[in-house]
Image (tube, rainbow, N blue to C red):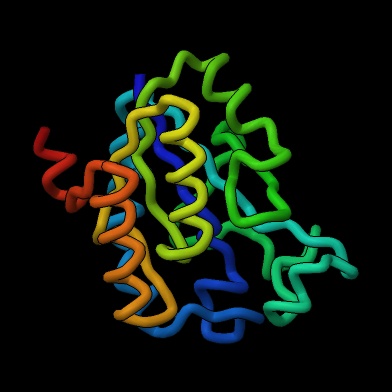
Length: 179
């Protein structure tokens, strides 16, 4: 059983007025990610949205500007992906969607063995989530055209690290949808 995990596709990262905007290039992943999410829903594959979800005094704000404050509009999943009430939502305070969340429990209850990963930021939250998934024994496929980083160099590093070090499978979304 597979699940689609959409990492941090939130307004603060994905919209130009967001507190920690990835950049205009992030829009390029909206459509392929939307297609993957729609495909999953039509085929009974669970869709899980992770959400960066911070307190006002979060220590992470010593590294990054304040973003994705709990309950704020910036912390909402972007409308372009048409989040549904019956999708799963995992709120997280650190880079990995597994750290101190119920993601692993949810996946195990659903009988999930393989994760299809989309989202932002490729070399930060996506990378750390992929690493933790692999360390927990999940099969992982990263959809290269459905992830974005702050720079092209960061994108190349994140993809290379996930492919060569973590041994995640790297595919384009259209390759996945043809399988």
